[in-house]
Image (tube, rainbow, N blue to C red):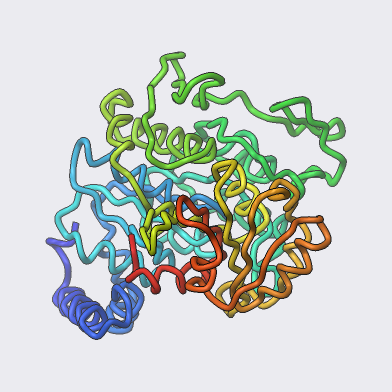
Length: 414
């Protein structure tokens, strides 16, 4: 760990912490990005040096990275201190800051942006890599999803080394990418969004699906048998030996039970007893504002983040059936400027309930709802949205920068 840092690396770490502290003090953010940037300028190998000697897990995928990382951290903390980028700064600057903040932590659970997986494999030499899912995201600035799966496959083949891969058996893109690795633990984490995996990533033929099972009739790529799964009944995870580990999660939806299954699978590879880890997951109430509940003017709002078609579909599965729904859509640089992806989302489940639309691109979203026959009203901002719904519970679904705008309105609620 960082006790054996070179003088240059120690100086870089000191500057990192100072820059991060100044950023927080001036209200510019939590300092993860600027701190790591300063540290890496002074010592370009700082991430590698800070990771040396630790037991590291990298967690990557299009959706669920932050939540799964938080669950994994909670599980591994049963046996020791964990360094983690808990607020989603998932590029090397954020990873460097996370490790610098916890120099004595033996373990590290790092959320990793999909496009930086190869760089982190080389720098952090992880014990475990968890691969959650791949679907379309930020189409005007991100790689096409099958091309990203191919990049992962090549990266894992050349750089995974001694890492054990924990992978989603229900996502054909993940299975194809991970199948080049020697040690893979398969998790039945589910795949509600299948539009990006209708054809085989290996040969281009059509994939046949039979319930949870899928296969390519041309090349033979198929769903592997999972060692870990979400129980068919109740709220539990089933381990490799068939034992049930009961969950009492505060976070809603099947997708979070699947995230919990992945976290328990990862933690078990670090020697954590799943029976000891499972109760710790119930302590996670929100994740960087996701699922946070806030009170404003007699309304109880629950905040849900949805960045892409798969995320919106999962959010609609989480919301309660009766409360009003506020939808907020932006299209800034980190969201991607192209909003055409909203036509891949089925909004018909919102028909018959009160729907309020806001955000920079509220008119785009309004047209989409009109196409699906969903009644709505359009307002300027979250304050107007709150005023437009009656007192009581309200579900708020927003994409990334819209979500951050709403968090800012509620003092960066976590």
